Length: 60
Image (cartoon, rainbow, N blue to C red; front, side, top):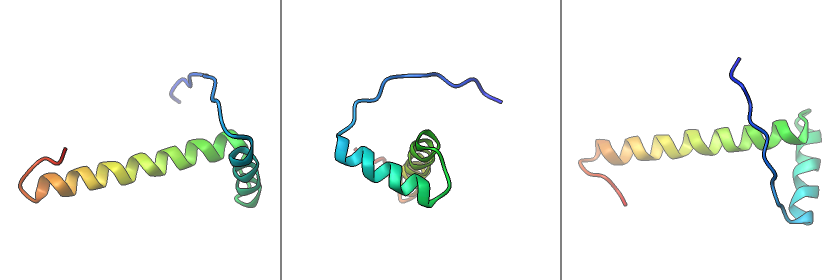
């Protein structure tokens, strides 16, 4: 398994509470939920980049 790097995340207290609630609903830890959301966002971003390149040009 890949090594994980720790870092400090500054986050709005209201957003933190919402993420904690969401994590509980999905049976994840807060850290696991944040990792999941970031992973999904990266997958979506990669898909949109590849679609943009398939249509004949890079998008800035």
